[in-house]
Length: 498
Image (cartoon, rainbow, N blue to C red; front, side, top):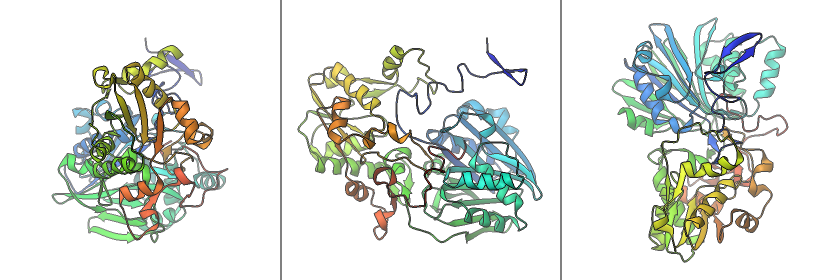
């Protein structure tokens, strides 16, 4: 029987068991302690099949957010929208998509991070204001959101969600200027990393923060325009990649076509390095750099920096496979599928006891005994956050008969929290913030441990040769934040959708 809870004296039917949606898969409780990229956005302008295109585009971006999703279309000045908890394929079916007519749309997939997973916070957020209907969705996080929210509340604004995105809507609605100028004024107040899609009847606006922390690409499908957090979503629907939306750029689409404007000059370019290391799909390109190719180079550079004599190389699926191939090619050590990921365990995996929690990792990942038994293994992974996952995987390989396990990580030590939209744990829970590499090695039970150097990472990605750090943000590794951060006020580990 579906449980219910009291809410102001009224019984409310719950759609999940436990204390909150997707219990057992939160950042603090997951059997895998990877950091999470919290959102993906997708937009269509000028195509009669906007809702269906958005469905397939969001499906391609599902890895960026698995807790909720939504699509809002505009049809001859009328908004139609639907949002729900769960995967894209669970929230939308044929009938639901047919109820979303129109030739323009924006869509969103979301992870919750700092707060509870709530339908009210699912995006796109849709509002009515003096100019009509307004829909907004974003990927990223606003460092100065708490201060702006307090200012708006003190002046009479009433918020319906805990989302950073709603702050933008209030700033736009309160402006006496036309839509485009109001959006520019709103963005000029923001500090953080973000990629926004804003929709009204007949207009779609796309923008990226002045540092380009969050990626956003533009493509064409026939006469229509497509926007997506990653280029793989363009490929999925058959759109042709045109270009990346530039830092500080504001693209406006309406009945007159495309206008390229700016709300700010580009500051120091600082694309999130974790996009290249882990978040984005390997078949995506960011600023002309292919993710699979750059990850292979990371593996090759790791081999040059930290060769160890071994029998096989294996990667932790899925994000580390490309790097493992690169490491194997560089060293001549055979690459093998020593670890297999079970793709069918689903999003929600509830462990009712600590004992089952410890066993749970084997439900999602298993070692191939006949491959690793009696072998010296180099295990490639993209990062170490708390260290719990690495310990479990190393022990799993040992239990399967590995003689030695040498761990190689395709990023520098993850030592600092992110304020730009990555779900990071409390800084005290980041193992690299309090332990040396040797202490981490002992904690994860590895025979040896090496992290890719900052220079090795920068050179492997390539990027913009004439720019600082070649245009990468490395703050989570070196504490060098590209924007001002008032640490006591900033929303740590916060998703803009949260």
